[in-house]
Image 1: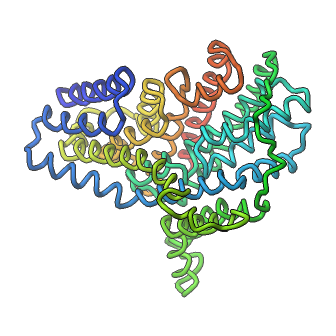
Image 2 (image 1 turned 90 degrees about the vertical axis):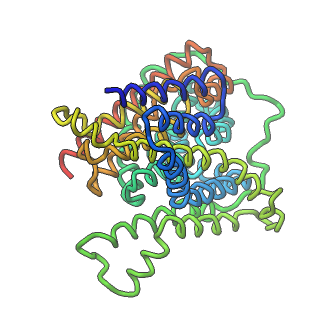
Image 3 (image 1 turned 90 degrees about the horizontal axis):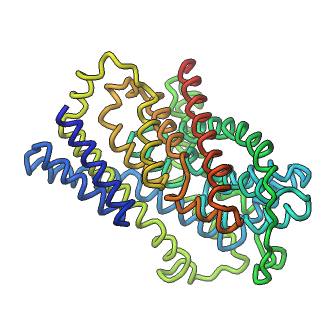
Length: 442
């Protein structure tokens, strides 16, 4: 009981530091982890070992993945390839289904690109389509935001799902496969929510004169734009299939090659190299410390450090014997797949960042997987997805994405809560429901 109170006390201090005093999540998590170790009576040597093992172990497995994913997204964003992908999706669906088109555009683009960046890039298209199709701007705005939210929390290679997979040692290919299924199903009630609720909000888009006309930019082809996104995902999924005990591809050179190029770090490296082909005229400055690679490192560094601090917290919990305590005190309770969801949901709602919520929850849950019956290869995957589902909601005033959605669209705070915040809640509950149903049959 005392250990549980110390955990809650440490988490409370971390949340207060982040939310009230605006302290960087890395520092809050790192100091909070050390404080937990001291308060729980761990030997000093074990605390120091937990720091080095936790930080080094997590970053050794996923630090490069986060960086390569960000590099890929940066090149797609800077070259206009991201917009090409969005416009291609719009052409497939048609302008008559504007809300569906914007939702799927946000969904696809947010797989390689951060959700905030996706919304900012596609907002001009949302405005123009709203005017052209005479669809309420609130509907296209929330459709875009919810589409970006679904893949951002559930489908790698965005940093949150990658970090969660690494901390829980879950198969990344299977997370991509099931994450795509869960997130796409979660879009269905979200779409009807937009159609029934957001269509009733009268909101006229304000098109600024200074906005760049997308059509004037020289952009890559649709084929080239899709390659950096689809090739790594396909390779990782193929490698996961090749690892099946039944050896579906046999034991041959092809399987060896697939296992190599489909390993997450090599697959994302290939994706990054493919993104280098997107600029119409390649400049070696793109790869310099002051170019796009340098910018990518600045974006990736905080996420990588937060992930490392989360790893320290997780290792501290593990070495303090929390797993044994949970086993003895919760053996009669059937929390299963719902505990990761509830913790992530609470952390997301409390401090705003989905990535921080996912990393912190994964660090807490990792030593408890055996106690919760989630330590099999398959259940680790669904535990990771459960965390992602919880980290979807509730997006409100403490979430930077909430402010991006409301301020760029002109929605009031009240309207933002009624549409975006409620939409994330519906999506989150749908996702965990789908995950639970799937676990009954796999």
